[in-house]
Amino acid sequence: MSYILGRDSQESRRLDIQHEFTRRWGHGRLIHPSILLTDLHAVADVGTGTGIWINEVAELLNSQDRTSDFIGFDVSAEQFMPAAARVPGVKFEVHDVFKPFAEKYRGKFDLVNVRYLAYGISEKSLPSIMNSLSELLRPGGYLQWQEVDIIDCWTNPSTESAREAISLIVAEKMECGIVLSLPSALMKAILGVSTNLIEDGKLNTLSWNSDDLRVWSLDTVSTVHHADPFVLEHKDAIGLAINTLLLRGAARRNRVLASNKEQSSSEREKRAKLGQKCEDNAQAIQRETAEGQTSWDSLLTWVVARKANVLSKSEDWMKSYR
Image 1 (cartoon, rainbow, N blue to C red):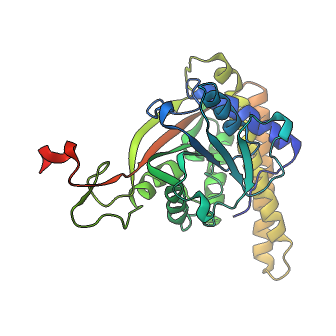
Image 2 (cartoon, one colour; image 1 turned 90 degrees about the vertical axis):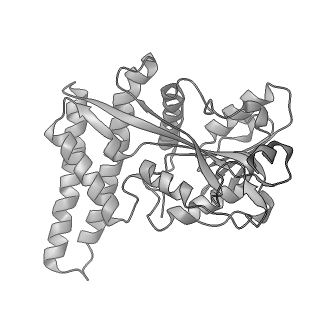
């Protein structure tokens, strides 16, 4: 599926602000506290955007006097930060997450980071994406995924326009075949990744079964009453920006369908009305938020999974389990 939020300088700026917002939302952490930094020597960021996350992680890990590899993958190079702004060791590569990664990257990384793909992944594609991400990891490596979906957004107080916005975006996701609740679907997809490495006489030391990935940690963090002033100050702008972008994307898609002369007149009329409804709703929630009539809140889901280690039963630590 194509990226629906644009790739101009304004969108790059929004992504960088969103990154800082997410970092503070996650209590100032770039990497989940369940992941030991000393374990990390090769890190990948899938769907890297401008590359700000991988750049800051490189700066963090390089400060510990070690040699590490940092690679950001994205379907387009248009938003990659200039070379002069990159921390030593950071590289970027164009890659479509819907396609398998090159053989040279398989089993290479100690940490693979993914964020904010809730509006680009279909139900059918998620299992294959999860398999591809798992293949990037070394045994014992970590997959970290942060996500916010439309069903985890709300306003306080609730307004008719906000409720309608959420309903329109949910309907758009369903019609386009996009995963309706990606945070929930992630858990199922992680548990669905299996390995062919388990043979007679061997055990998976992380999950005790044939799973290739195991959920290592699961956190949810709300913007409500958050301790960081930056989060409280920017939560309305962040929530409003993404929802108006999604509504206007839906409006454009429906206008295109309304102009398709191969469609029946009734279908074209329906599409034209729906497109206008999405645009009117985007304006309505902008107006309500600007006038202080309501405030946007949301829930961040932070999932960490770990790649299985497959060891022989002869390992000393396993003697007590025989």
